Length: 137
Length: 453
Image 1: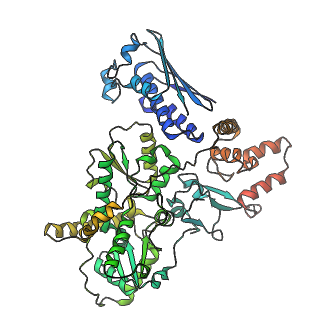
Image 2: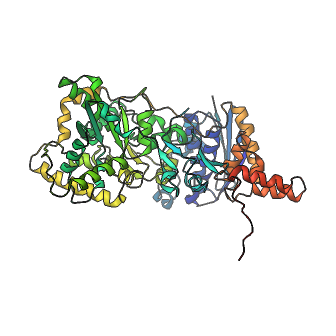
Image 3: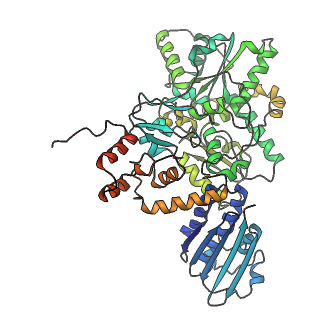
């Protein structure tokens, strides 16, 4: 099963559209509630990242009977040092973004904590792609 | 199957579908011109009961006279019962009238409000990792979380309700006075449907100790009638032991639990739509640092309960007025009755736990994930061809609910009027076949002839 969503730069109002929709789907599939929670938290973080740091992007989701795969691809400034970005508390968020309660530097670490597989690829000046997988059992 | 307290009286149902459109969990369908409730989706919130123009929705209760079988019948009243009476009627008169009607004992269930609070706090101390804690006070909310927010069931505080503590207290106290259990009959006067369900089929317990449920509207009518019959000069027996603390009186209103809880960050939310909005956010971990949630299905909490006779705001203010008086007495050093329950405090708190609330998701398409995926893909494909205007003519509240019903074998695709017109235009269905489909949903008396203007 395949689903796609568009994320618009700076549109914090609609942050969570993809994760809410995925949540509903997984509930209908009888996936364990605690697994759903991990998926939703990770995807929500990725959505917010694309809204806050990049110029929008695309979320694509593939659901199989044993796992979910999520790819959040943005057109953005890119991450120069991915290892540094993975550290808790490291953030490059602009002050106005922080004022809205985002940009605490917990995004990528939080994704890492909640998914079974995380792969971040990025090219400075081009964009970032976050691939995540969560197994259902 | 899952017990619920709301029942449709088919002889009264006019099949208007208002209940179907207002139901927050999409539990109602129309077939043969009558509404029916899908049991696994109904949480007994009673929105349909309020909306029904034909009084075709009833709340199951027990025979009013049943309490008379017990020499020691106990009327367990919700505090909102007192809020129903006009200002000139005082609490003592209501109590006295209940005795005149034949109850041997009368007790307000909020007498246990402070014990309930202590039991919650004890649970919070012993489970520091479970946050936010969600109050189990409102049974419609507990059921809502079970069916729609399964990941949050473990946040519900699994303790008994004030009603149960009051009932346990009544049994202990009466037995201490030498009365055998079989002579004690506990009757709860219910302000809503969800509490009936909570008594008849408690979540996390085998069986409730309550012997029967009395409809609050019916009791109000009987008490008020009796007062009118007695006339203005009737002398009521003076009573002194009916006093609740201000905190206990307010505990059933919105903010009632929150205002006295020790949690640092907490929210009190009433109205089922507001609760669902919030829980959607909660489930996504979008709200951080919340320690306690007081969630109530009814607007203005129990003052706005289904069987509240009077306007919710009038009832609420009367309760505030009573609480102000109680607070004044407390300032003058008078002990409230709820503190009398403290002598059984340890026993009640030691027996406060129920089993953890289990999820019971209504959303699951199939227990086998592969089959569920197949069904979901079918639903998605079908939705593209449905009109997506949620007209409800198929007898389901939305196109999506209809598609789900069809894929799960619970509805016939030909119930969609748009799809039928398409088939008729293609010559794949006759007009008569189409009409009989319409009849199957709405009954055969809806198409009644030409209209002259």
